[in-house]
Image 1 (cartoon, rainbow, N blue to C red):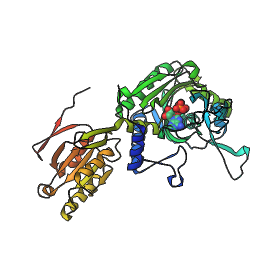
Image 2: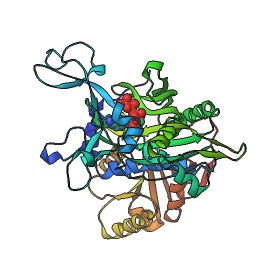
Image 3: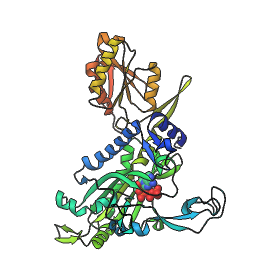
Image 4: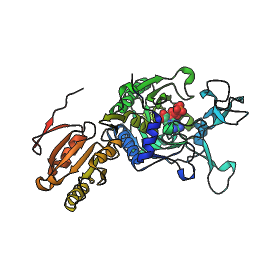
Amino acid sequence: MPTKVEMEKIVSLCRRRGFIFPSSEIYGGLSSCWDYGPLGVELKRNVKQAWWRAVVQERDDMVGMDASILMHPQTWVASGHVEGFSDPLVECKSCHLRWRSDDLEGDNCPSCGGELTEPRLFNLMFKTFMGPIEKEANIVYLRPETAQGMLVNFQNVVNTTRKRLPFGIAQIGKAFRNEITTGNFIFRSREFDQMEIEFFVKPGTDKEWFNYWLEERLNWYVKLGIKKENLRLRQHAKEELAHYARECYDIDYLFPMGWAELEGIANRGDFDLVQHAKCSGKSLNYLDEETKEHIVPYVIEPSAGVDRSVLAVLCDAYDEEQDEDEIRVLLHLQPSLAPIKVAVLPLSRREKLVAVAKKIYADLRQCWMVNYDDTQSIGRRYRRQDEIGTPFCVTIDFQSLEDEQVTIRERDTMNQIRIPISELKTTLQAKMDGESLLVLPPGGKIWKIEREEG
Ligand code: ATP
């Protein structure tokens, strides 16, 4: 049975160490909005970078883009959001709290037990006005998903990149939803980041590509270091399918509050391109060069949330170990995700030691995010780094002044190896790449251990 960390522990660590704060906290916070602090912003960037690398950088059949958040309002008419992007809302007749009726277990208000109104549909899109006059004709929406920005640019991308089917567009960006019920920390907020792919294929090959992306995306989370037993695929039942979807699966993660969606993967058929062609009057056909026929591609859409990935990564990495009389809190983040890759720790503040440590610090930060810390005991400094997931600490001691060697201490095993300063960068790089190294004898030759497959 997989073990679950309590959400309070994650929230408290994030607050304490500067990963995530409540938005505009000095004013009492803004409901369901969050600010990523100095460590959180690094973790989030690393998650986005890992995704971009896997779906754009390392592939021939994908390109990226960055569409604007505000789009022509007709976009949302065509996509069906104006008409149908709604949740059923009920209101308590006594305390006036509002709830999503499909989230409720009983017939009464979960807060005061009062009687509830009949459900009415509540559109989740945030509205604002374009230009200086606040009138109906000037309404624009904050996009509730990044997908439409890519779909309306289908023809632009085909024309400028000469990509041929099958190919995809990827985008990372903000989305906004005026959610009725929020909560569970950054799991459901009103402003969040999405990482979405629109993958265009020939009709008839859609099932095959749908299955391909299911596997590809599930494996991405495993490669990110998330335990397989905490991930599952869940197929949407017919009655649960969105209006545009022919088939849909969720990738769920076992969050502290239970299984919940990390990413949705849908076969959207030709719904979007047909709709946008109809509403814009522009052809979104594609000329199939083999058959010389004009076709409307089908779209496979893997749609992930950055914040939910960040939360899953944190929950999965969190660990507590008994270390003598203390509990050692640590994040087993893989090096590519860790906000800080290396901490440089001089054993004392003596001038000579500091000079060497500062030089190492200046050199290493050319390659990675590096912390320099010379406060408190070395044990405490190690603990502080463990808690934020720093995989390696480099300690400079008095012996270093004589033999030009330093100690690398590893977060997970607490093993220490001593190596020449001249070998430090290459050794750290090899370790970050997951290579096992053996250093024999202290300060001597470095041996690379071949990794066993599997
Ligand atoms: P849910 O059923 O949880 O409301 P959804 O099915 O409406 O999610 P999609 O429209 O499929 O979500 O959006 C794709 C992804 O965007 C989700 O898998 C999730 O990771 C992320 N996402 C959606 N809504 C939110 C939100 N309010 N806060 C944070 N992330 C979100």
